[in-house]
Amino acid sequence: MSTFQAPKGTYDLLPPDSAAFLAVREAIAAPARRAGYGYVETPGFEHVELFARGVGESTDIVTKEMYAFSTKGGTELALRPEGTASVLRAALQANLHKAGNLPVKLWYSGSYYRYERPQAGRYRHFSQVGAEAIGAEDPVLDAELVILAVDAYRSLGLRDFRLLLNSLGDKECRPVYRAALQDFLRGLDLDDDTRKRIEINPLRVLDDKREAVQRQLADAPLIVDHLCEACKDYHEQVRELLTAAGVAYEDDPRLVRGLDYYTRTTFEFVHDALGSQSAVGGGGRYDGLSEMIGGPSLPSVGWALGVDRTVLALRAEGVELDLPAATDVYAVPLGEQARRTLFALVTELRRAGVAADFAFGGKGIKNAMKSADRSGARLAIVAGERDLAEGVVQVKDLASGEQGPVALAEVAETVKERLV
Ligand code: ATP
Ligand code: MG
Image (cartoon, rainbow, N blue to C red; front, top):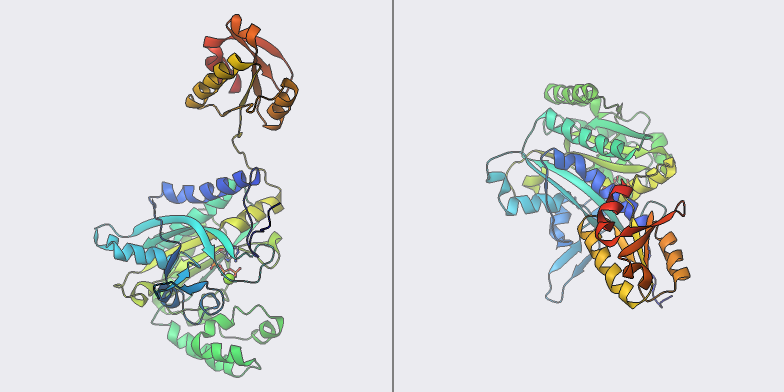
């Protein structure tokens, strides 16, 4: 062991588990890619002000969870705590929204950083895959994004997740609701911090996880009862489109995102086997965000799914992913000439698309065969001087132990046939 350990709230991804992680990332992105979302990659850090404005000065993410720092040159930066603000910033900076086709559809995948209290499923360094559709207001687009997330989970074999759905209204009806909610909240018995929150960010109070707070919220006014006709109609269309696509959802009138630029459709995916860290992903419409960071009006919608928690959810359900073998063929050379010949053969196999590995370090046959077994390979190729003199290698089935000679020139072909 080294003197060092990974910092608190982080963990290393290592083989063999890392393969599942990678597969989950790819599977989450696949439906979005098929739907015309292009890959975007932004820096791991941004100007702190982007997040202060784009995530919201009153949110926990900005006030408590952000890794903010000033550089030697005096620039105020922060490690990215989420993806949407950066992606929108990048799209605006490159004028993608002026290139013609709206919405601009983008997906991303990467590491995010939040200074949180670490616990199972809650880390300081975690991984998300996200998708954003920028510059269009259309219930079909909201439905598309939800369907893409559902299809991603389903393609992984995840079953016990639930989709919670709500509408947050728009600049027409939300202010009326906000005022009604504030009136109600001001009459409750709450601590000072929460009282402050009522004034800045009252919807967030609905999201308070504390029992004593939740109990008092039983009669809180709900946004559904305040939606304007346009928002009602929009939301109804989203719901119908989801139903038509075979996507089940639960109306959750208390599901909120705290900030004014989140509008209309909002949703969250929860998995009940994950304890209190049950959210595996979330998203919604953010029609006001672009203006908030200095851009034009660009109604947009998107989601971010947590890779770490999706992996935990799959594990909790006992889902075994169908992963390609790390090694299909393992070569065991006996002697110097065999080393060169088999290494050339392994290279040829790899170039032909076969996952092949090699007994490095001049191991004795016993040790080398153990390594072959541990590698998970289905076939071993063994050759010594005598085999090579006869122009053959021995191909051994590692499960059955069956072994026989194969002419050198035919090994690649034979191996490929036997692996299908
Ligand atoms: P939570 O309510 O659990 O704190 P959140 O609302 O902060 O979640 P989002 O900002 O919507 O989460 O991020 C989208 C997804 O990213 C979450 O649903 C979750 O799966 C994942 N995620 C968020 N924070 C963490 C974290 N600290 N560790 C691991 N995954 C996380
Ligand atoms: Mg959080």
